[in-house]
Image (cartoon, rainbow, N blue to C red; front, side, top):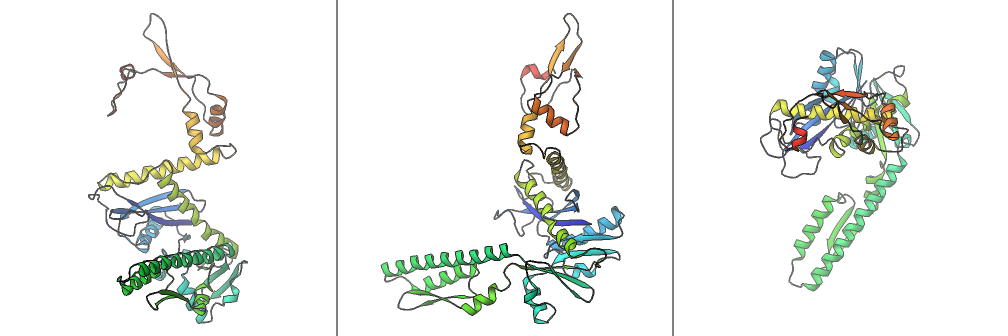
Length: 376
């Protein structure tokens, strides 16, 4: 089983081989980007990464992953887990024999299945429910926490537009010559951006903007709050309802990998390199670094510190140069580390050597070094 997802990373400059303008997940306007796909095993351990042009849509990256798993990895009986924007009908129909999928369906697709009588709204409860239609299984659930969050967000947006209207009305009152139609237009544009125009209307009466709520439309807009449906073609004897649900939720491991690669100490973004091989190499090295971070987290899970704090603690390890008077021979001796550093290394099953050979190697670096270090 493989987990697959994509993200994007913005570029500095405009000459990167993969650089294109596209849907920017980093929120960086007027920046070219690259798209990065990461394939992980079921535990979230990265097994492959691939770089695509910045305007590549998510489903377009899926085919190469299937080909990679089939031809490079030599896998035959495979299940690939991807989100609702990744694995669509076209991708499902093009899967080779022996390949299966776990994905989710969109809200319009859920509504369509309800209208056809395949699904019923009453089946969406906190407890998992399964419906089978031909060869496709649907795992249904309503997340009460998510439903409450969506309701609060909707109320917050409504309060925001109400405050905005109060300011607009105040301005119209203080400026008799100001355009009411312009104020109405900008308010409706704001309403659309907040996605409230389906159940909220803005009207004008005597140079005053008024808000009207359509309760029936609100009820229709919110009846699927917190509802989601997972879709798979796996047989029940291959994966039961709970397992399918858990595997889809495991996609958060890939999202976590992207988050760590972007925001912790790995710094996959911004990308400064330009050439094709350099860009691929940059992303690949970041993936390897993330695998090390995962290894450290597992090893240090019983310590009351973060990986960053653990690495900072290990920087206290040093070496001393030992020379014999009257002779040219010398070596680097490593003193016993502090207790916490020793425990961290022990958890990693790393044993430091007592001495290191001293080599007269000249260090070449862009950053100027102290004279005493150049001869070491």
